[in-house]
Image (cartoon, rainbow, N blue to C red):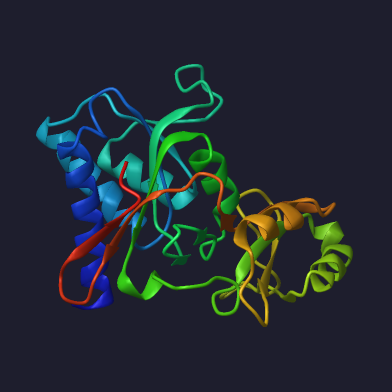
Length: 240
């Protein structure tokens, strides 16, 4: 299967399985992620809502991209701060840039990891959908770990990340002069290491640096993971 076909397969399989197994049901508060695998999942969820199989879903989104999709599909969108949400979600579903056998993830290739972490670390159940190219053994040496920073802190944060062994590159805009500016008005340093990192330890170390808003390492709310394979099957990890 092509990568695009895998993305649709894994998104559809995850949503269908979660509904069949009673993990998604009417009246839930659901976080919806960002990116090329999360969008098919949003579409599949909308199809079940439109068919009447599930009803009264309240969504919290992680980016303008997802907000626009929900508006197009007629899914009502709320803030984590709305009283009806109360800062807690029943379930969230999102893609990942890398996911290990231990279900540690890198997220933030789409520059939405701060809102993604806010949503997914405040969800009772966190679900990741990924194509086979995202399944890796270790994290840190290939796909960059995004670190969202306050612009004024760029140099001191870079120095502190260098001290942790990271090589940092300021993410530049595409068809825009200058750096990428996130939905939160911040900049992103993309970081790689010569050797694989301890994900949980590095997540905490990076977030202890003054000027860092949040990083794209996800270790603290281990997700249920669905991974599509080249042969058209879907592997499930950490089902509970």
